[in-house]
Amino acid sequence: MNIAIVDDLSYENDKLKNILNEYAAINKIALKTDEYNNGESFLKNYSPYAYTIVFLDIFMEGLSGVDIAKIIRKSDTDTIIVFLTSSVEHMADAFSIHAYDYIIKPTCKKKLFRVMDDILHNHTTFFSDKFSFTTEGQSYALAYPDIVSVITAEHNYLDIIDKSGNVYHPRMTFSSALKELETDKRFLQINRNIIVNLDSVEALNDGMCLLNNRSSFPVYSKKTKEIERKWHNYTFAKIRKDNTQRGFHL
Image (cartoon, rainbow, N blue to C red; front, side):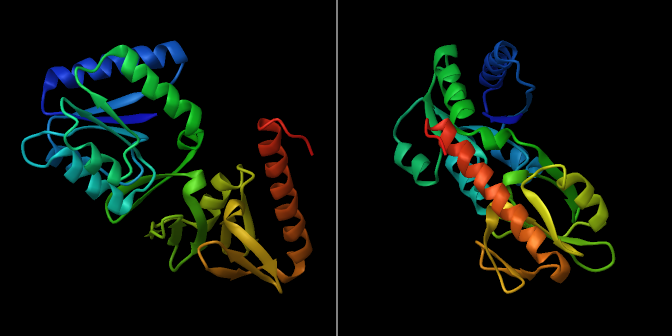
């Protein structure tokens, strides 16, 4: 799990990092923290989906925590944002940009452990495998649930579309992407140069695969029945798992 701490007080960064490391040791979580003393240095090194959680101090010299959070949300809807502050004055602004929580300083172990417990309990998809690539000099690591489709572009390039509608264009062969993604049951190759996330499939009709982002792709004509069967089996298994977790049985 990658975590960023952005606070202009170094001792607050160190304190938070030490508590997080203690939590990780107790819960046997692999954790990496990056500390930044201002918003500008954070944004210089930031890339969408690079961090599972970003802890942001509200009041800092230069960009405020709210300013930084707004910038993050322009390209990254999934990263968990937790605000740190000594005042509740800007709580409304914090939650208007979908912050996960708001911790009043001084940060204590009890408060932080409670937030981390909530995150682990309610957001397990954030800790799923990630698909890493580089494009235009920037590195990305998309969580598998965030990927909608992967399509061959030109000259060993791919178009990777995420659930927020962002399109990434890394130089990577289709075969290498397929080799990695097909190890996860949610991904299925539906044509010679198209991989889709089955969680994003709305229908398979007349040889076309319809996705929930309103895009559609042709399906292998000779494998249409097989692909339909795999989709139905995957969907049924997912529903059964969800119902079992809720105490229902199919």
